[in-house]
Image 1 (tube, helix red, strand yellow):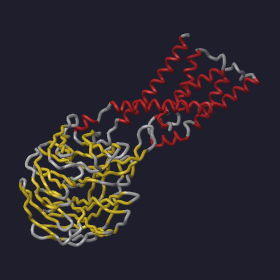
Image 2 (cartoon, helix red, strand yellow):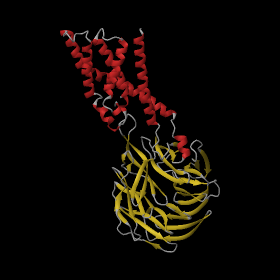
Image 3 (cartoon, helix red, strand yellow):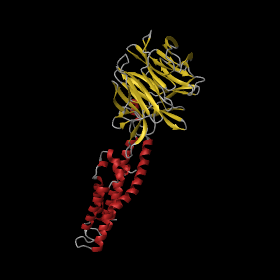
Image 4 (tube, one colour):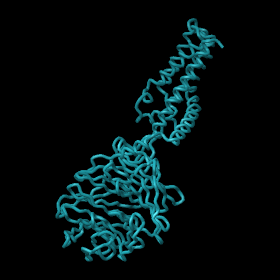
Length: 525
């Protein structure tokens, strides 16, 4: 083998390596990307048997997730993602199925087990059964509000004791409550329901008397629809959020008003547009976080995501939305699972926000994940993981193999007009274009390049490139690869004309097919 052929082959191999390496890096970047600039990637912190949210709380600069298990509660320290610590609190008779609600206040966990309120210190000591019949509860500062089918009670928390401060029994059939302290007054949002009638209330309590005992809004449901997850929030105006659930879809609806008399109340749909991605739909379960001037909502919603080289795929992600004055100001992805993420819970600390959610693990099991906006989470988790490299490599191999096989057939089809020209020249041997003339080779190459310019890449690949920026979207790239292949052929033969234009042209289109299809491999479906 002479030096010209050796150099040509080395250059061809080097170009193939460069193209595959370039695509591999793009795959790796896509598979290892974080959901958004605000949020870190995820980390698995536990598992559970029920499709329920996982509460989190802050205590002494530590962040804990709460997981009820058989005869115990797992307190999972998720403060730093590279050191997840689990502490078991033994509580006889408790398990995930009979814990309806669990939350934290002043060093104690408050639990509704089988409609009975109890509490325990986070060190597992001093278990107290209050004997209070409760379907659920909410904690606001040092107030604990319980509800059942017939009454709502307000207790003051004092260490491990509860002292009744207020009660109301005029409103029946309460299904859910939420509470907020606004301008030193307690606002309690209620969802009541019997048969197909639902009513939303916003009770007020000033420490002595109750107000707003009439419904804010009445809603009719059916056998195939209902509403749940009523939540209250405040940013200078009052929000009442809830989920509308039907057989076909999910919606996040809300009422917003600044008039304390609750006049001019209108129901709206939350229209979430994720920055840089598009509209979300099927907005399901959610949680709320408040700051001094804004309300933040983390919600489970359907969104179309596109990874490098793939068509958009619908997945259910957790979306972090910033609200002000009854409107969404911005929305970001908080997860990027590509599958399903639900039941979010959010907690705020001075270092940043923490989020938990669940993902399906199959066979009725769920994995619990966490992420954060804190520096320590981003620094540890926003890195390339071994599994990212595996995904990138396997995808590269599959896509490259498919594109080389399909692409070679397409390139051969585009070269047919040039081959017809060579056959005609071979048969008739025109004076200036006879078979051994270099001009016939150039003419055949120009015919091939024209065909390639108009018909390559194939239409499905072009459609995939509509949302892609950079060299992949340039229509001159197929043309450039033909010129590169022509250069390699010239180097290989090392002289002005070829012994066989037919053979040189075939060698050129094979090189061109390899290079062009390796380059566009990520977009072959």
